[in-house]
Image (cartoon, rainbow, N blue to C red):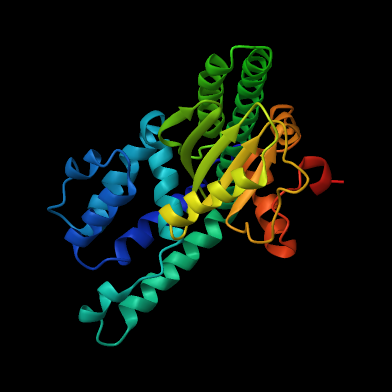
Amino acid sequence: MKKKISPQAILSLKEALAVIYWKKENLQDYLKLVLDNSTIVSTINWQGTKRESIKELISRMTNRLDIYEQDLMNLLLAVTDFTDFDNLKFWDDDGSKTRKAKEAVRNLRTHTKGYIEITKEQEEAKIRKAKTNQELKKVISLDSELVILKEAFNKIATNTNFQQRGFQFEKFLYDLFMLYDLDPKGSFKIHGEQIDGAFTFQNTDFLLEAKWKVEVSRTDLATFCYKVESKFKTAAGLLITMDGVTTEAISPHFQSIIIMDGVDIMAILDNRVSFPDLLLKKRRKASETGNIYMNFYELYK
């Protein structure tokens, strides 16, 4: 429901504009900042008194609400929120000009209270609706992208050409990181079934290694840890192994890396957890327990 601006509110607005600034130049600058259609300020006759100029301005705006309704609302909101009266001090020896200006603004607030409340509620409702729509679109887009990625992943899983599968898995991981704004850096390099790359998560650079053929051994983990610790002083490592790790592979010395497996990837593709949330959970669990390898089911059981 839109509440009509009352005649008392318009009169109060004219009075407040006439007294919140002493110099007409300052008032003109203020109006140009507040109004979207600020060119109207330059078309007003400012040669007479402030009150005459303000009367002309407000009359023209109220007569053409089809053009200036939003500007009139902006002006009402701005003046009711006006609290800085320092511009009056130089000419205000006895404080009367400041008192008069404050009283005019208070009077305007009284006459616009209901209108301002409704207007602000409408604006807040618009913001909430826009935010909700944006989030909804993002969710719908994410769901759609995950469906596409899952289809791609299933095709990769059935490919018996290991070299070709490596290239396909490279693109899959790049697209997955892009989907979650993880800023994959450079091109992934393939060495047999190994895919190397880097991405950024929560201001930390992660070195990536992915394997899809056999279980990861203790030697594989040690080699990856050395690679991470020797190349980046503050970096971490993420090892993605589709077939898991051998029972003797995990060591308490491997504290610079985190491990994901096929269970984790499927949980992400099924939208049971987001990649960033799962990575964050794994990092926290590793920090708390020293366990660098707990998959989705173990973390969320």
